[in-house]
Structures are given as structure tokens and as C-alpha cells.
Length: 505
Image (tube, rainbow, N blue to C red; front, side):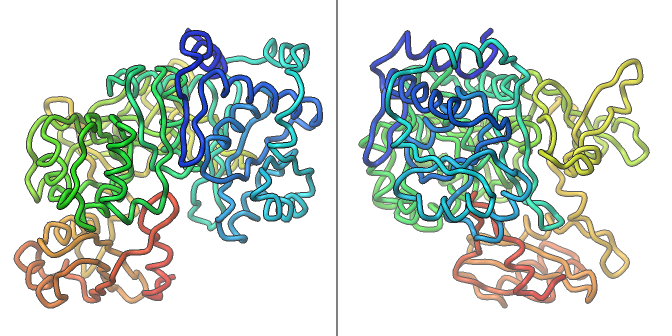
């Protein structure tokens, strides 16, 4: 087995040098070109940067961004992708944690990247200027000799409850375990063409970046704006003969809300994976009806467990009110449930979903306190140290070994003397025929349940519907209808924005 992702790239460069590896609206780049460009830029970075700290990559949504990630790896550094369109306050918080050795950017984003490099007190390098000259083989070879499979590969920043983003540090080995298991489960081959939806600084994008290196498949970066125009998006996917997607649930949901499949169908799509949030049954049913021969997979897992740790192949036509299980663990993932007393939950019992195995992240970068709180010793293994990650999610194993998701620990609230699952209210509201998306929040200070939703249904009708589904104490007191729910760059609902609107501290 290869010990780092560069060996995957080099193998693809030997076996299929002229096949397209990555493509966007303006550029298509082969595996050979990817390899050569990454080595050239990596050579220049290695020659210019002696500080071993990570390199922040601040570029747009293009194939050259992916090549730049690989170039950083060749240079012997860890890369940290940062979206240049993020709010300045968030970028500054990320840079404060990261303390990068340099910022790597491109001419198009040089002004913005230079401003942040000045804040971070580090040099800024431009991709176009580094992509010159010959590969410095003695420099790269020296770096590779020292590189191990447990070497850090990237840092992906996620939201932190304290308002300070957490930088999840992941190794080559962990990433390669996941990509191998995911590619095998989805049956991805050299002939496949992947349609990338995820922002390149988001954890889900690692699938679309690294699956081509392992399998020889091609990856097309779908333009972000097309996800508000289903017909344009579907026509492009048909033109590019996209066969495989790994999208956020919200991406599929929004397209359905906007009338996907009414005028234009998908002709080549056969493999569909979704993750990030609970898939509404009524949304999946529409996709299944329009793609009856496609494979649909529900995937679950946190960034700290290298993207996802369980999967469920949907083997039947779902109903509108159906809630899918999250399935079984991928290879190299040990997924188990712990009760509050530290004992393992039995079949049919609820417990916190915990994960162990070689796929765990190395920890949070420059954040030992939060690392020690989240990555702890497995109490079920006493004979030797076994590190595990506590997800904060509640699950229950069925008799057939399938894992069900039962919400977040922090989504269980005490309301009017009752234990209330906010996710249960959300699921009930999501079943209403005129509701497109919904989100439920709780104001602990005022003891008020809030429901935000989008769709055609009127508020009065939604409340009447909920009264047929839920006990009175679970009916939201505040129901807010919106044209659209606010979204984060990764496609998930922006709960902070909704909390601010509701005045929840």
C-alpha cells in the first residue's frame, strides 16, 4: 500500500498520464500536467520557505487550487485551505491559530491574500510566479525520504462553539484509509466522472480531490451559481457525462425546491452519496423516482473522523416521512455507543456515537485543551491506550447491526418539565407537504421553541399540521416563515444567523 497521497498521484501519472484529472469552467488538466505543475511549485516553495509551519492556500474554485494543495505537500508542508470570500473576522481568527509560514495565492486574489499575509506577518507567494523552472529533484527527494504515512497532510477549519474555529489536523494515512473505503463502497472506477459541489476548503471536498488520484476518475468543479439553476446545472452535468456525486443533503434539497427534474433530467448520473444533515424522505423520493437505476448512499461522520465514518445504501423506495439510518462503519472505523456511565450501550439502547481507529484526526492544531477534551481514551479498552473521538451525537444500533441517528446531545432540552428532542420537531415539520427546509432552536432563558422554515405552507397551516404529529408541549411558540434559510459556505444551515434573529444568546 502507498504511504502518502503523492504516491497515488505519481502512479496515476504513470498509468493514465493523458487522462483528465481535474476540470473547471476554463481549464482541464491531465494527471501528467497535475504532477508536473505540483512538483515545480513544490520545488520553489521548498527552496523559499524554511519555516516548517503550515502554508495557507488562499485561492479560488479552480483546478489550480487543487494542484497547489499537492504542491504544498511536495514542499514538505501541511496545507490549510482558506476561502478568500470568508468574512474577514473569521479569516483573522483562522490565521491567529494557524500562524502560517506563508500564504500561497494566485494573481486574481493577490490583493486580498497580501492583506492577510501582512496580518499573519508572513510572506505571500503567487502560484503563477512559482510555476516556472525545473523540478528541484534533490530538494524534493530529501523531503520524501523523511515523509511517513502518519505525516500531517492538511488542516481543515470547522466552527467552534466558543466562536473560535478549530483546525482539524489529518494525516496521509487517515485520509487514504477513508478514500480507499469510500471509493470501494461507491464502486468508483477510471471511467467515472465526478461532479464536485463542495467548497474546496470544506471537508467533503477531500473526496473529490483525492478519489481521482486513487481511481483514475476525473473530477469536474461544478460552478457554485449553477446550484440555483437546476436546468443549467443538469445540462452541464449531462454535457460532461457526470456519473458520480458526493453532495451535501442541502444541495439536493435546494435543487428539489427549485423545481429540479421538471424540465431537465440527468442522463448519466448513477452513483449518489449525500451527507451533512438528515435527508428529508420527500426529497430523496423525488431523486429516486427520476433516477431509478442510480445507487443512493447516506453517509455520516465528523471532520475529526476524516470526513465520514458510516454509510447506508438505500435499498428501497423511501416514503415522505422516512428517516434513514446512518448504516454501518467503513473499513478501519470502529464505531460504538457509550452511555453516560461510560458503559457500552446494548442493541436497542441509545448512547453517544464514538469513533476509534487509524482514521481519527491527529487533533486540533495548536489547541491542546480542545484536543484533550474531544480525543480521549476509550474506556472499553483497558489493556492498552486506545484513542477515540466523542461526536456528541446520539445513536442506537438495531438488531441487524444498522446504526440509527437520534440527534445531538446538545439538541436535547428540558422544556415545561419534559425532555424534548429538537430534531424530532424538525423532522415532523419537514414532513409537511408545503415545507421545503426547516430548523428548530431553543431559547433556554425564555423557554421558547423557535421554528424557522421555507416553503409554500402558511404558518397557521403548519402549526395545525404539527398539532396532529406532536404533543402540545412540543409545538413551537415562535414560527417564522422565510424565503430561504441562511446558509454557510458548506451548504449547512447558518444556525448562528437564526439565533441572532431570534435573540438567542
